[in-house]
Image 1 (cartoon, one colour):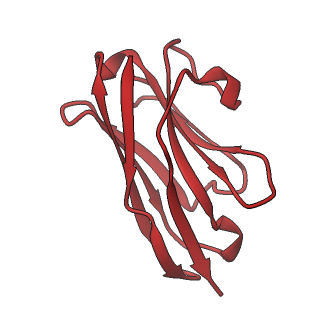
Image 2 (spheres, helix red, strand yellow):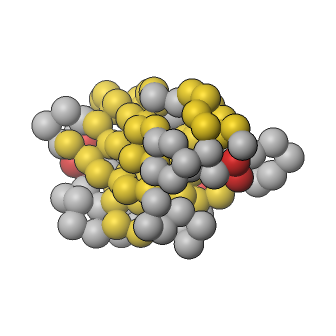
Length: 124
C-alpha cells in the first residue's frame, strides 16, 4: 500500500508556470512507476506524464510535450510535475498515481494507487 498526497496547485495566468509535487508514504517508493493524470469538468481523466522508478524513462501526452517535465527524487519519496507555458485548456484537477509494474502505462486502469488531486486553474 502507498499513500499519495499532491500539492502545488493554484491559479495562474496563461503563460505562467506551476510545479506540482506528490509525496508518497508507505511501501518502497522505488517500487513504483509514477504518473500524473488530469481531469477537467465534464471530461474523462486523461494521461499527462509518467516516469520509471529510476527516472531514466519518461512519457508525455502530446498536449503537454515540450511544456511539462516530470521528475522524481527517490530520496524524498516525491515526484514532481513542472508545468510551463500554461494554457487555459490545462485547467483541471491533477492526480498523482502509482503503478506496481515496472513499465509505464498511459491509461488510468494501469495504476494501482491515487492521490486526491490538486486543482490547477489557468486564466486567459
